[in-house]
Length: 361
Picture 1 (cartoon, rainbow, N blue to C red):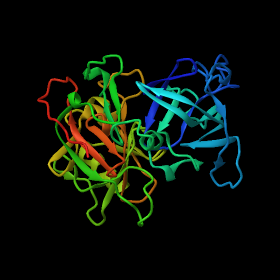
Picture 2 (picture 1 turned 90 degrees about the vertical axis):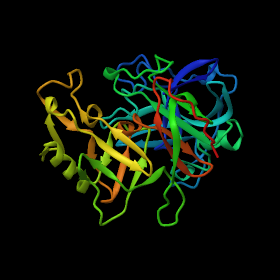
Picture 3 (picture 1 turned 180 degrees about the vertical axis):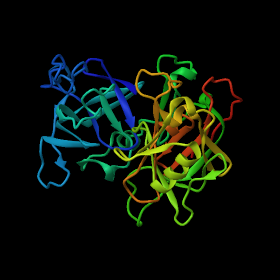
């Protein structure tokens, strides 16, 4: 999440999401003091307190006529927003006349994208064709086209599990998002660039990379009869994998299948010494045991009850993966719009690794 300033320097915590394109925050008439409200305990954008706020209109997805409202859909949740334009500040970057959604009501089914979210809005960093609001560029595209950042990239260092104490010089943040470049102090070694994969020669929507080697111990979990690709998404906490990959993982770890919710579980105190390794050329990204299993909230990973594998079974193509934060916590990740590629590097959480000056195309 990134702190941004709006309406006379009101601060909002944004989640940078590489799996979506639109920009939204909470706005009036949403009542943030109502416990049942969508925006309860969140800051709310008040148009009357901003000198640069303007109402505007857009052509919503699937429609042909301009409208002053639109609807957002995320993972089973629906939100209703008015269309607005204002100046956004992200760190030292000032972005004038940026179009966004001012969310005033949401229907959760249930979920945490809107109601109960730990952030105050979403900053979409996918490609423009993925937008739910047509005919306006994403905020990421907007800052690139207006040359407000040095390079057309956004980079992520995500802190790992709190119990294992990775820290940065910004102890309170737990991580770092760099818009327009990379943070050299958080990178250990070279960056491996992986081309963004197109499907059916169509436009790019999201950040997809090819997978060629994924193993746990001596077990290769990829079905070699098909090629595999992965959607790299900073907006999703867990991972998704095809059933053909989950099953050999579960067998290698001794996990059992729960038919009721189609997940794999095992006793939490039996989850040690496992890893899942993704290899991209000379670079390997290793997910250690403490991030491979989900422990019930408030309980120690050493408790004797069940833990769920942090990769759920995907419901799309049999060769498709999603790499969420469970993967990104173990890689310094760069999303480069200029060359349409994802860059991966070994992270340096302590900032004391041998410095390498990285050339960013």
